[in-house]
Length: 276
Image 1 (cartoon, rainbow, N blue to C red):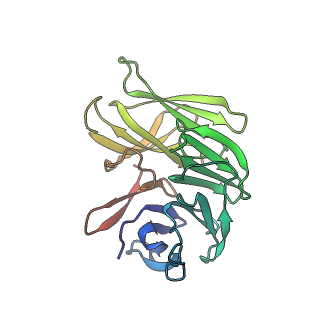
Image 2 (image 1 turned 120 degrees about the horizontal axis):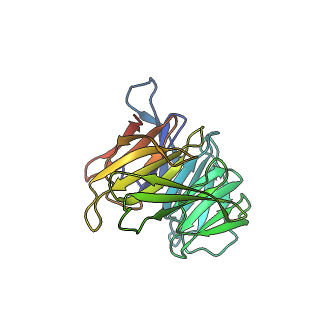
Image 3 (image 1 turned 30 degrees about the horizontal axis):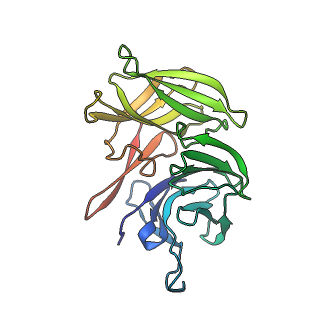
């Protein structure tokens, strides 16, 4: 009975799906490994029945889940983060103490550090649990915080002689200086490259969409790159997302796995992919 699932997140073997039009987050898990996922519980985000007729309804856009089970949901219309404990009880709302126009994607490193993407103002903001601004970045950065605390910028190569190469520049925060620059090469030009996080060995996990310039994408892969050299360690074919900014539907999971969500008029599907 989904209306239009908005975002998903995979954590500790459980799948969390943000169903924004129904104002809820559904948590699914497999009782036995290899078996279908079933509904565990639902977190209600907004009770429209109890709200006044004039109350403006939240517009939920993204979610994040921590290892301890804490859940965060972004409300773009209210410009706040809802914070829930592992049981689904509302802890409170986090209001950024900086002027933002909206929130499309979030990345939560801990209950003390959260990244908000605000494309309407052309910025990303990292705040603490009190809403205080830690630092801000432009939208050239990826909306992730690596295990090292660094952020990543992807630079596409405009040199016609090297169209298959990109640069991954990491920045030590909050000093904001470039700490490392890696080059990654593929067999086709890179149309879209999304850093999704890193593994325990600090290797970069990402989603790469490839294809000739000025043409439709032809291939996509989930990839693992060396965090030291940028060398391609492993890859597995992936679906091509219809959205170039699709991070809410493509996520890195544990142990080198990825999840990918797709939908049509009748069905919402989530598939899990393992790197080869």
